[in-house]
Image 1 (cartoon, rainbow, N blue to C red):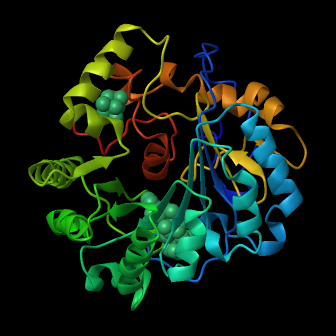
Image 2 (cartoon, protein in one colour):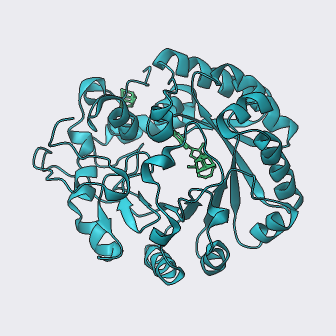
Length: 364
Ligand SMILES: C[S@@+](CC[C@H](N)C(=O)[O-])C[C@H]1O[C@@H](n2cnc3c(N)ncnc32)[C@H](O)[C@@H]1O
Ligand code: SF4
Ligand code: SF4
């Protein structure tokens, strides 16, 4: 990796001198989406988990007082969504006090879980606080899911979805795509239908943490196109909304998203779509360090030492995030959707070591 590149080094992410990035910055939009890993503690050891790159002990996690302070600082921006993940967030000793404190302060309050920690009572309790619970499903059947997540955990995740539905909680599922489960996307959509879910989300694996350690094989651009295209088309035939977080996928398969992307692009960089780091989102690690996203933990600031306002406005790396589109390389630099999409910078970094490199998972 070139020494001038922002480095993603987990809990102790490096400060860097962004001198090689152009001075041109996009304007901040509005802080709309914050993801927070409330803890690194987890009861599973999934083969793809990014978390091993940021593992800490509970001693490092924000205290309840610090967590409340974080929520107050985010609320000041009238942020739309707070998404709480981990680790397994329901194993955090402060989760219920945090949810109680955050209740009603965001339009969307989301908890992401592996499902094994949600029984009937927990589902009812979650329903008092959150708008959505995301439960990970990493295969269309027990064999594939449990290969990634451990024996018996598919059944527990499916059971958790049932408990949540009984409690009237909105549930979203997410499947992390790689070579070992990409042939099952139709069955995954079938599963969503049989569980009565209106949506099914997919996201390609980012080869970091355990995914890198265990050599999980990522999909080529054409394989990804096939898997996502198949899932989306099949979902349409069953009236299930299937989507992926990758903007090039939305541009490829969704007419409305493509029209929006063309409009953004025509504005010549005045407005930015796609990856939202520095524009409308960031990620808070369990120890209060603010980084770009869970898959690209580039140090932007430390809430134990600075205010959120200072980090959001002035952090050198936040400013680098706002200049990324003007410095992209390869096909992303020349792309007609550079300002509307820009590729996944975490995927580019994980696969090349260069945060500005083209996103090799894109088939457009
Ligand atoms: C880190 S987990 C935390 C919440 C909870 N423990 C769970 O498993 O859902 C959040 C989501 O990130 C996904 N994930 C973990 N490592 C990943 C990676 N390397 N690439 C893409 N997604 C990943 C998980 O599958 C899960 O859907
Ligand atoms: S993906 Fe979720 S459940 Fe699996 S090890 Fe990571 S944090 Fe734990
Ligand atoms: S080439 Fe890059 S910017 Fe263009 S659509 Fe693909 S990932 Fe997005």
